[in-house]
Length: 592
Image (cartoon, rainbow, N blue to C red; front, top):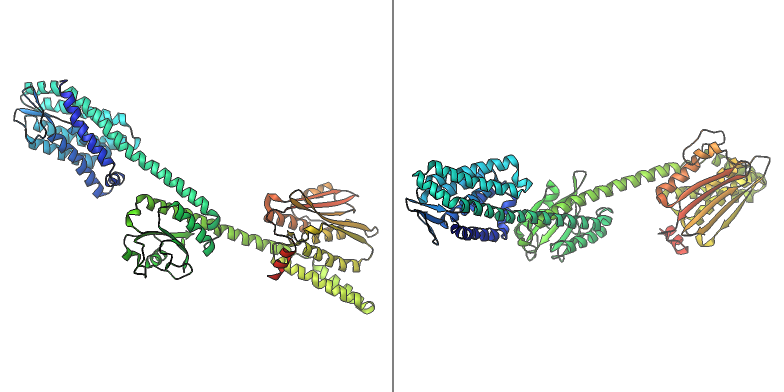
């Protein structure tokens, strides 16, 4: 019995070596990963059936209690039997492939064993076929492949080998010879087949683990590329953003060229064939037109399938992915290869993942654009809320001045023109230079002071270096207007101070009056919502605060402080980060 152990170990070593060589073959790995297809199932069945056949041929012949070792066993004496590792291949095939493959492998190995002869031929054939059926169905029942449980698989292999010993005792004749045979071969075959099953499964598991590692790396790479390209795809599909994104994708993938298109033209092409796949040109390939039309991934395996108009194009293979925005194909992402062998499963899966990620990024860009448009529309509506009586009051004032002070009336008309020009410019732009906002305030004050001379005084303290800083339009003028209209009683003159100065990395705008102040209850709601009051609705304050929040987010602040009978102060803090200000900035803004 123990003399048989090294011989069996030698046989199982042959199969393990074959299994290891197969595990290094790309085609074998692909078959294991795609075993649901009929072709893959037939291939797996043939491979593990071949393991059973090889086990039969390399078995150790047992006859009359004697062990005979030979290189290749083509037939067995009528009174002889074989000690081999046939069950191992059948069990592994059934565990990996399920009932269909288990039955097929069992039939191949079992019928071949029957053809070799010997007094255990029928028993071995029956036990082999039965082992294939049992392991196939038990694999499906206990989901051994999904759980990756080597212990269950080894136990299954040992049980099937024990089952074979039992069937030999039941079927093989004469019984005494069968009993002696089982005593001789049972332990070596059970032990070696269990050990071989363990090693074989560890090799198979390594294939699946390597696939998982590869997928994890692909996912990491896809997320890295998506993170790097996010700032560009969020700008939408345009030549500049697409070129920068394509350069990143080319650097991080195995492709030889990357192209990005919209629905009409090539926006970017970097890498091989850049001499005739020109950005801003018409579509260079029919393959791209097909993807744009049908919205499905397309793979070209030959230059003919790419259908490039240039006969000397070096691109031989490509995968073209649709870039979709709300289920509509907005463009394509194309990965080109100068050799079809480079377009393997890994590159295809990576490309498909990138296509989906980029589509999400484009949808985000579309959402952001729509959000900006909505915010702009809301701001425009808020900016349009100019006091309706101001124009009529100004016209009445100018009309009365015409009779006795025509020069002053002409100056007021010019100031009125400046005031409404500032309104129009502010309604068209999100930001204007502080200098222009101050001009708006001065135009308003000129008209109001002509109506109510001596009622109030406005003082300006502006840091000259800040005049070119961009600020939201209608920031100071409504604050000054509020102070003039609501802060002072008719019997008492007041003072309004407007200041602008630097503080740390920001600009501070302060509008302060010495008027009657605001009650604590009213102070809590002003700037946060409109109110119903005889002294005004608070729309101007709410308008300013809302626009500052929309433009600057948490980087700016709007604060109202007030003490009854002492006055009110509004403090606005704006960031300077990213500001392009100064005299040249002001000129450039108004040049175009």
